[in-house]
Length: 361
Image 1: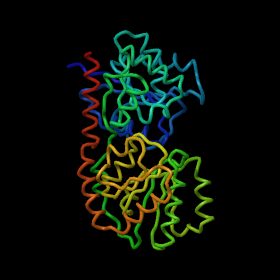
Image 2: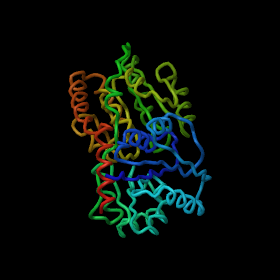
Image 3: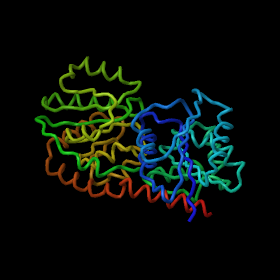
Image 4: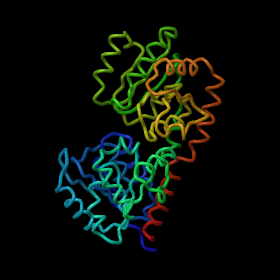
């Protein structure tokens, strides 16, 4: 049987959830069934572990070097790259779908699959949403939602009743579950992700600050980097938290830090399905999170969820996580049992079947 040719298109391989998802998925695709290339529209090679994992799997990465901002020429540069490779399917992510649209519309027997990584109205501005809406209505593209909540929001925003596929984000369960737990004296929370306003780590820090006043031995690991780093550092310094909060920065070995923690903390304003949430579940950590995006779809019944922006509710949930060991053990076991359905081997197989389905349609 002839291999299905898949071009995976994304802006670049900066350290982020969507980029990690792409790297993890592509590096686990079965190349005996698929012929895959990755095209990065923006910037240059970053030489990070996301790129290395893709290339080590035998998948080449092409770079188009688009500069920041809108680029009319990028439509044609990407079109030339796609015409060279002749994919059966374009699997696009983030703005990759926008710049793939012209090629898709002008090639009759080609189809685009667009993974929707977040709330549609927050992922793209109105003009880009109009482009995706036109593609979906013409049957030239199919959206793939990463949770049931995102799926319903896609249907509402794009007025698409049929052909909204559902495939969850992948996690390497074995990698995180096999990491040996590191003994530590203090109950430790861990936060991980890009330090940005939508992730709202300052809310988590405020809740932690309130908690540690009654529990002086509690600790927090804060992983990641981004534009809000200085704001978070200022809060840590002003509240004399340097001995209790470790601002680690961006790391490749998140699994090693998960092994040092007891509970995972997420305080985002909005989310799709954060990979780090699945990583925490695979690491057998109790999840304490704001109830946003598709998070409830994944951890309902095995986590502590609080309204977004509510410092007191988040602080109270952290208190419960710290003090109720029986609940913590029960929820961790339930979460670990559940996370197996999101293992990267399962998700890679689902995407392979999806590529083949739309190639033949």
